[in-house]
Image 1 (cartoon, helix red, strand yellow):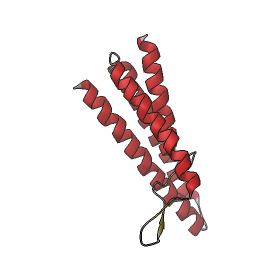
Image 2 (cartoon, one colour):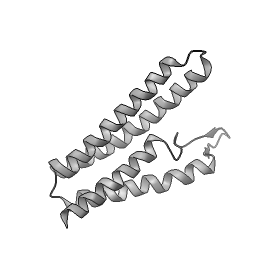
Image 3 (cartoon, one colour):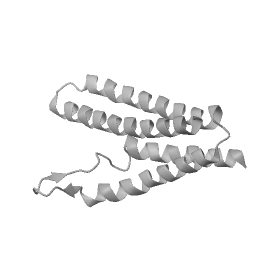
Image 4 (cartoon, helix red, strand yellow):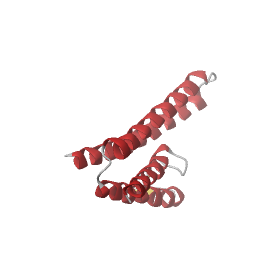
Length: 134
């Protein structure tokens, strides 16, 4: 049961990180269209705090609340590496073209996005969990 909870939290954290990327892109778009960007600056700061809390909660759950499961740490390591390694080629490929010829970014990511950073953090969480279990 704890393994399932850890995996649900992992995938929830990845989805929330992607949603934070979309919100950050929306804030950047608002900042470009308005003359007073002060509100969007506060939104960007709030998104950073949400992201930091999310990643700390994930690490706390995997490393402290559920410390005895190696498979969970291995899954975190694999999923995090997949996120990190798939994100950069997608960013530099320019996106995907739909059959109708409409260019469409598969993921709204760049190498410094919350999505890629969450992958890095997930890799580190899995690696620390495995080292802790040795």
